[in-house]
Image (tube, rainbow, N blue to C red; front, top):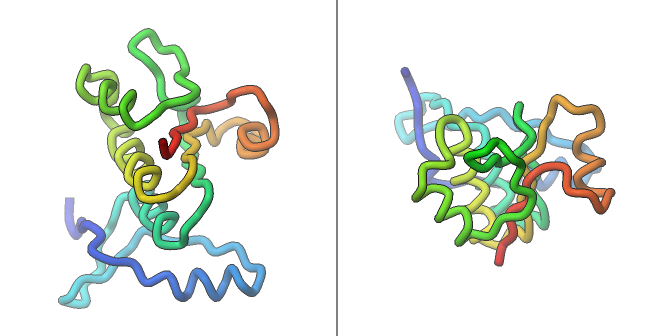
Length: 143
């Protein structure tokens, strides 16, 4: 797969400066190793680690599915860490959802209050998830 790496640390200073100046940063999931080579890192993992380092209240992960689905294809709208562990154990979670859920769970366990996995193909998906009372995607709670 080439130059693929894992996160060993994040320096959030540049992102914090941009936030303080009312910019919305766009972060590329490219990291640099001790050898100064560049490495591709899973974008969901980067987002989750960055949310943790920045002390974010919420993290929204956009995907091409409605959210986390059970074995019958039904949307699971509200999950705890324990429920996610059960979904890993019984094989419900697989494929591309694995790094997304792993990152989301890590962020939730590290202080991010809630992580939302929502369908980015739907117009206004972020607003629907945050500003309405109806569950739109999957919310992972920190407790």
